[in-house]
Length: 155
Image (cartoon, rainbow, N blue to C red; front, side, top):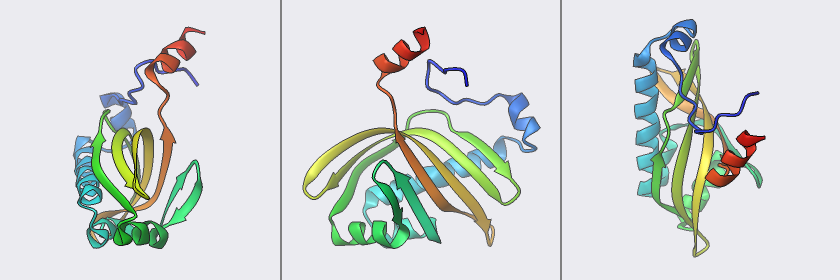
C-alpha cells in the first residue's frame, strides 16, 4: 500500500461516485461523528450511549472493551474527556445500511487522575437503524509522529 505523507485520507469525487453516494451521506455521518465527539466531551454516559448500538465495542492497543465497560468508566468519573477533535478530512464508505468512517482525531482524556493526550486514527463502523446512524464498532490506532511519517515515506 503506498504511503500517504500528509496522513490525510481524502477521497475524490470520482471515488465517491464509485461508492454510489454523494457528499450528503458523508456530511451526515461527519455531523454524527462531531456530535458524538461533543457527547464524549460532555462526559455524560447516557448521551454518549445514544450514539452506540447495544453491542458496540472499541478496539485499541489494550484490547477490546464493551459498551458497558466503557460507559461504566465514564459514569464513575474514572474516564473523562476535555477535548476531542476531528483533525483530518474523513474518509466515508457506505455499503447499504452500513458505513465505515475513518478520520484522524486528537483528544485529551483523564483516566485515574492522569492526563492523556492522544493523536489517533479512528475507524468507526456505523449501521443505520430506524433512520439513525449508530456506531457498532470503533477502532483506534495511534498516529505516527510527523517526523516518523516523513521518514517512512522517504524510504
